[in-house]
Amino acid sequence: MNKFTPQSNKEFWNDYAKKAKDNPHGAHSDYHIVELENKFIINELKSKKTFSLLDIGCGNGQRTLMFSKFTEGKVKGIDYSEEMINEAKKLHLMQDETIKSKLSFEIEDVNNLKDSYFDTIISCRCFINQPSENDQIKLFNTLYDKMAQNGSLIIAEQSMEGIQRLNKIRERFDLEPINIRWYNLPIKENIVFDKIKDLFNIKSINRLGTFYYISRVINPALSFPDEPKPNCKINEVGLKSEIIFQEMFGQNCTFEEFGAQLLVHFIKK
Image (cartoon, rainbow, N blue to C red; front, side):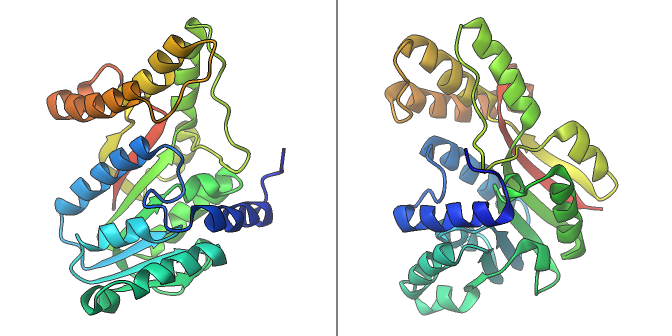
């Protein structure tokens, strides 16, 4: 197993970019999760007016382009992977002049941001690609300093506590625990969120519990001892069920605690 360091992580994503190229789901192998993340983020963008947006860890830029449609002003996507930004700039060249004028992509490290004061910042798995909890907390503070007053920070990350709860119920079905990839560090909410409570209020939070319960418990239990296929019919049912349950029950759904995802809309205090 590779050791998680900033350099090994960067090399991994440069290699990944060469394989994924213009994949519309960016850097995630499960497109169901990406669709649910996009739904959450777009709903939050629709709930407010956004005049300047920064997408950190933007990857190949496909999702940044999507988010730009719900932004009235400038949109900037950054990534420290040169290969990812190469793909993003290819995408940029294919757009019409209206999009080209509002959208830009740059090679940039989130720990050394050039511009300041965005009213919305989006992170899709940038936090879990930080090498330590202290680095995650530092990133929250860095972004806080780059946000306008009452600005929004919308994240799509993973929760360590969510994975632990999910693994406990998988164990009851005699399923192996879900392993954490070497290049990811899920957020420990009890530690990280406690350190940033004076910086942000939470407007919305979603863990995609219904989808995770169906796709990571029921699907593998039915498939056992064979490996479950991620793009199978039951996961499509899980995708639809997650959307329906959100609409009907919101955060009161009893499956929510089994979600490993961490979709949060923070408001700067």
